[in-house]
Image (tube, rainbow, N blue to C red):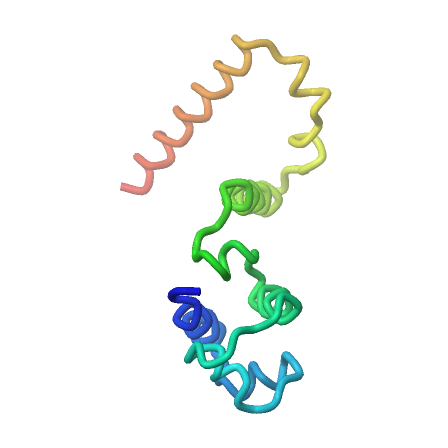
Amino acid sequence: MEGFGLRLENLREKAGYTQKEISFKLGFSKNTYGKYEREDLEPSIETLIKIADLFQVSLDTLLRDEEPAYLKDYRSMKEILDLLEEAGLKKQSLLDVTSWSTLGKKELQDLSHYFNWQVQQAAKKQD
């Protein structure tokens, strides 16, 4: 797995842990995680799942260093919903498929244009 050890090292450093701390968190002997980073030892599939869970990344990200498109979309949508919630808007109304399906193409285009206009207005205020 080319570059796998470097991905492990980057994930660990980003999380602020030492190799020994990660080994302990995963229930390994103290030097095991370091062996994975140096690529002296290949982890089992069960271990890969534990590592991915610990760092909250997908197996694709862990193994191939690329996040699947659906996960990128999910993360973006989650960030948007969090912003709306912080503004006091209810997620339930925004996620109601029935409400969205009642809108026609023209209404959806109008919403898109209005949203883009609001973004431009907000950007002008920041300048």
